[in-house]
Amino acid sequence: MTSPEGRRDRAMPVRLQMRRADAGTLMGALAWVMGAMQIMRDRGHAEQDEEFHELYDRVAPKLERLVEQLNEARRSTMTQPQFEEPIEEAYAEVREAFEAWIQLTATDTLSMAVATRLEGIAKDAQETREGAEGG
Image (cartoon, helix red, strand yellow):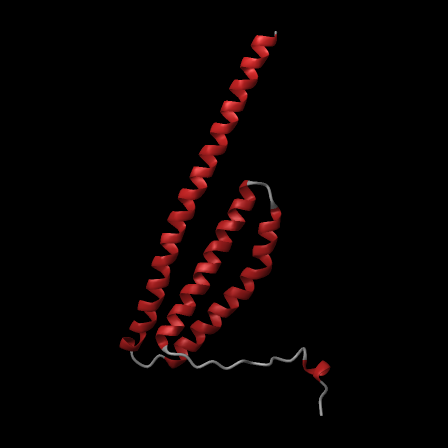
């Protein structure tokens, strides 16, 4: 009998059976996470914070592998195009939710950036007034 320690390096597959609509929802959820991670990576670049890029580099390949496995399973079970509709509909529903989330977070980010900039301008103006009064 093989010890559990010897089995660690071998693939221990998990078999899933899901409805086609559930596969579409899962694909959408993975796309959402991958999109959010891309945004996080880009934000890290803008702020010179490579921590987010490193996180993306660690996690994104794993997610991409999952998407490829899901697509491969989808292709292997595809018999007629009309059976793909539930997948596409479920994926579209999650994609639309992600697009709404993007708009929401973009608005929040813009609001925070504007508020921070206005605070900086007010602080600079205050320092300038105090310097002129004291000088």
